[in-house]
Structures are given as C-alpha cells and as structure tokens.
Length: 303
Ligand SMILES: C[S@@+](CC[C@H](N)C(=O)[O-])C[C@H]1O[C@@H](n2cnc3c(N)ncnc32)[C@H](O)[C@@H]1O
Image (cartoon, rainbow, N blue to C red):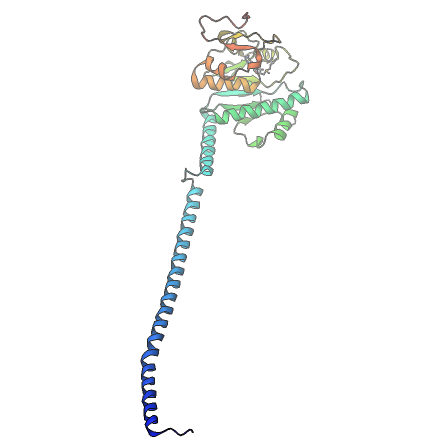
C-alpha cells in the first residue's frame, strides 16, 4: 500500500467521508427521479393501453348493436334494411291481394298454336306483368290458368323467369271457368263490342295469354264465346285518336303486360285518360285526346 502522510490521510478520509456523504445524498435523489420518470412512463403507457382497450370494446359493442338492429330490421337508415323492409311490405301486399285483391286470370289455354319465339315473348310478358303487380300499391290477385306442367310455356317461364315457381300468384292447370262462375268472368278482347268502363271487385278479368306476331284475329273473342262469358275491350276509341305516322300504322292490340299496366293505373287513379296516356305504347299510332268532349273517336283519322 502507498505511504500517505497522516495529514493527507485525514483529508483524504474527510474527502472520502464527504464524497461518501455527497454520494449517499446525491445518488438516491437521481435514482428516485429516474425511478419516478420510469414509473410515470409506464403509468402513461398502461393508461394508453387501457384507453385503447376501452375504445376497442366500445367500438365492438356498437358494431354488435348495429348488426343486431339490422337483423331485426330496426335501422331504417341502412339501405340494406330499407330494401328488406320494402321486400317485406311487397310480400305482405301480395299475400293480402291473394285473398282480397281484384282478380285477374291469364288464360294460357291457347298456346299450342304459338311459335317457340312467341312462347318466349309470352314468358317475358308474364314476368313483366308480375313485376308490375309487385310494384302496385294495390296489387291484383293473379292467376295463371290452364297452365299445364308439360307445356312449352310452363317450361319457358321456369327457364326465363327467376323464381317463377315462387311467384306470389296462383298457377293452375284448371281453367278460369273451373274456378269462377261464368257470370263473374269478363274476358278482355280487342275485338269485343262492349267497352270496359270500370274494374269491379265482383268480377274476374281474363286476359288471353297470347302473343300473335302474325296476328290471329279474334282468338280471345272466340275463346270468350266458347266459354259463354262477357267480354270487353279497353276504352281506346273513347279516349284516344289516331295519330298520323309514316307507316300509317294503327293498332289497338296490346301485349298482356301492357293491358295489365293500364288496368293497374286505372284502378289507382280512376282515370282512363291517365292510364292510357301513361301506358299505351307510342308506336301503336294512337294518342290520348286532350279534351275528351271534343275529340274524334279513335276509329277516325286526324288529318
Ligand atoms: C296480344 S293480345 C292477343 C290478341 C289476339 N289477336 C286476340 O285475339 O286476343 C293479348 C291479350 O291482351 C288483351 N288485349 C290486348 N289488347 C286489348 C284491347 N285493346 N282490349 C282488351 N283486351 C286487349 C286480350 O285479352 C288479348 O287476348
């Protein structure tokens, strides 16, 4: 060990002592500060984690709540749910129409003589007719009558029309006459003499399920005769006039879905003018008269 003078040794001891004292006073202070900064940092980290978990739980809870509300149909603001609600209302209306709605049959007993192309067009028209009924505020009770399961039109309807077998309408092999008394039936035919003035809840209206590209005149007329039932034509002559056109083409024969659209609108508004104005196809060469009292009958040509 090196020799240290007594005095120095005392100073050194003192210094050591001081040093020790200083250190023993200083070190714990710094450690405390460090310790407390660490603790604070850990505390803040822990608090952030707790807050994040809390907000994640809250979000999760809200997501579950929203999905429960959507499933039960309460959240009307969601477009998906609105669609679901609309679908439910349509279904309800159609179900009600099946028991209390105005009745309309499409008589499919005359399809054998139709070409495959005409059969396809008829299947398309039946789809549109059903689509119009779905949209109607007061749908009809629809019946497809004389529709044999082994017929081309039945097969074509299944092939072309999604969900055809689930359509909310009656599909039957029976004829309209098997289902309703003859005096209730009104067969709609463009060749009828009598005009359809109103649509009556006591009556059952029948449309001929026909597409005749090469017009077979008076088919529905003959069928109504055969069934010995009333018949009526749309009041075209009473509310429309012929319109000049390049081809000089004028026809009052409409497709089944077009006749149906006219009937639905008439039932909604009570106005033939409005119904014909809305649905009578422009290409048929007729226009609705603006003033019924001064108009020419539809059988005359305007020059
Ligand atoms: C394309 S038409 C068939 C035309 C066919 N030549 C016939 O004799 O009925 C389809 C069906 O719609 C209805 N229809 C078409 N135009 C009509 C009108 N102007 N008045 C009444 N019913 C009409 C009839 O029930 C008709 O059978």
